[in-house]
Length: 368
Image (tube, rainbow, N blue to C red):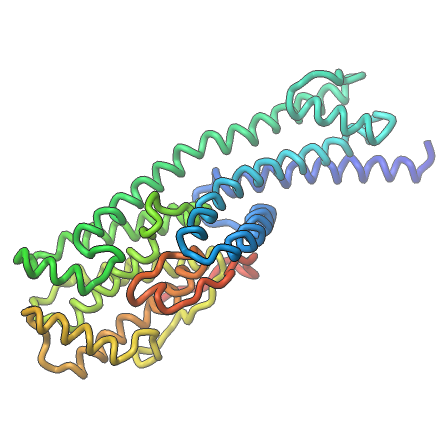
């Protein structure tokens, strides 16, 4: 064996082992590591599957049809991701076996497949390949076990998220609307008892941020009912809190301010995961997607219903803008990304474009 063959064998061994380690790292970063960390392989798989689903969903004219198709996107992406991890590992160890003396590329792939799926139809011929076989078999089992072990965690987080989303329909109707919520609360005489509502949603925002940044596939898990969405629910609550802080003539409640801050920080961190654009440092007079005419219509509607409103309408509008500007653009971006159903003041002002997650160039924006 000349020096060229030795160099090629060494490169095949090192490169193959690096591929296997890369697949394992992607699995650990995606499911095991409890913090946001980039994995280009994971993002590439989700991006590729999303392009396919966008193409299929675009053929459906009705939202119900698109929602039915997109409900499969996250589960199919996770299965495709596992298949990709296994494929990369198989290719990597095929290079390792060839470098260790398996004579042909075909035999190397046969040996790699036998070891990866623990089938045993290609027994290793010597000690070095035996060690490689054991290592590959362990990695194959580990990659599959990681996905299986974390599915209950994902569905538990999904269930907790959907509980408040479903309960919101009781207060805010369907699709969720801050106006409908306040009318119902007014009828029940609960307009001065909103603190518990804000606190429960503050906790909800914190949980959604933690789960949807560390397990980003959860953002694409759609609600059991097509008309529900975690994005539109978040938008309705944030608008309700902003209206309470700016326009309702009720005692000042710091919980609503904290709820808004918890909400827009959570949505910004989730947007950072998918590198969605937004202004991280907006000014209170920056334009928002809600028009003054829409705000005045809401103001008059609540006032005519008998709800006490602050007398200075112009000041109420300015204060509402100052709150809404913190989450306006990121709310709309997430509504498009997740193909959320139409709801007032959120997904009703964006078209269902084919926005897809991109690989970030950095670790996210710094928030105030």
